Length: 228
View (cartoon, rainbow, N blue to C red):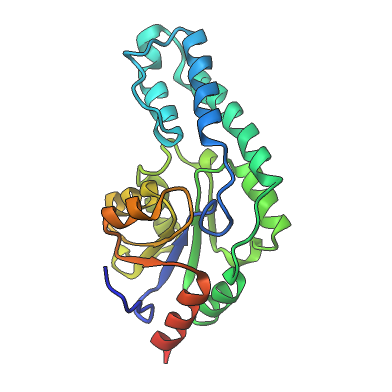
């Protein structure tokens, strides 16, 4: 990890949403438990479904659906309905992180393209961006419904970079989780993590992202220096 964060060679900055732009409010354990119970009722068995992470659970269930004679699209739709309810629940509590808009205004003024790549569903994501007055800050917005595979799969990041028309060498992802670290590495782009999100700081540091920050105020000051 480097201590000096330079953004003067960055053409595109991608952002995660929950835990990154807003505080983390998704009830992970409850969502996973409810989804697993639904899958057992549908005929899945524990030897077929090994994942216990919401970000990979849906992908695994869809991949093995045909083994028990279920249409993959039907399985995906049922899981998305569960996730949608937890999205809406989190929406009632999400609070914007301090300094987010100041930083976004700075990088937009410098001509840096921006994208939002989230595991949150598109309907709730649109509501949240409107509620928090963030919709106009992003050139590309991709949620759970825009991809087949959630982060840590790089599909969303690759699609965002393609839509922005920017090369990976001049792109960076700002996230808060190990899924974000792995998604960025799988996509071949740099990764910056803001702490106090989905995963504990010690776990984040152990994963050795390119940069770790504590706040947007810290990032804003650093970026202003790098643009001089």
